[in-house]
Amino acid sequence: MFIRKIILLLVLSSGYTFWAQKVPLNPQEGEMVFVQQRVVVDEIKLDSSLKKSVPLLMEMMQGLVARASKKDTLAIDTGIASQLASMLRMSLDPRGTVTSPTIYRFRFKDSVIAATVKHHPLDDNEDVTIINRSDGTYAAYVKKDSVLIQNNLRIIIPRKDSDKEIHIEEYKQVRKKIMGFDCFKILVTTKRDVLQDFKMLSAFGSFEPKQSYLNDDSFLLTREMYVTEEIQCKYHPATNLAQVLENYFPLQIIERENLIMGVETRTLITEIDID
Image (cartoon, rainbow, N blue to C red; front, side, top):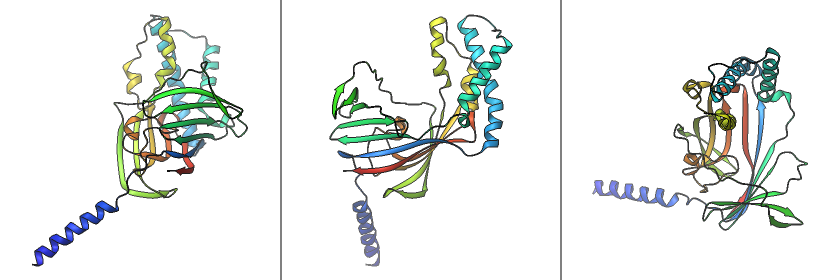
């Protein structure tokens, strides 16, 4: 009799847990807004990493140009090399420019998402990307006098990152509420595709980067995310990592990369009203 009571208690407990679980919300109406900003959190680390990353990228650029030109080495004038190094440092160091937060907005209507991006408060860009979730297609529009007009001059290449080298660690015991949604921490490690910027060299010859560039830990990129399983949506304003969006929906992302240490790119949800 006592054993039966224990079994009944276990069954009832399991049933309660099952019914208490929330059904993931697949947004059909409403909107969400994310704000993204790059911030310096440690100037000493940043200065130290720039001393390594600028020469590394210079060497990489010279090597890629040489290989595209079918040469063993490529001599660059000292003055030009100095200018290139200075330009690289300026592009990597966020302290040299004043930037406003980038605002990503998703508006949901049935199977359609209207996505907009504003790069500063006075940005009058009226471009709208329409995402059809039913077939995965993208279309470019521009808003004029509250009317959406298709913009055939803007080309959109739908892209879902699916990185075979991605590594995801879950920390389900590290939890917090964000905008009322239960979230837990995950760490996502990938490699920054620095070589993508140099693909133009393929027009001038063979583009075969050295394996050492691909294996260098300087290009490791880590995203600390707080994700929820209470929202089900395979599209996100600020990330397109398929392995993440298949399982979770990030409401906070902090991105750090070895190439530029001491800098974080923070993406935080600021508004959400979805049904």
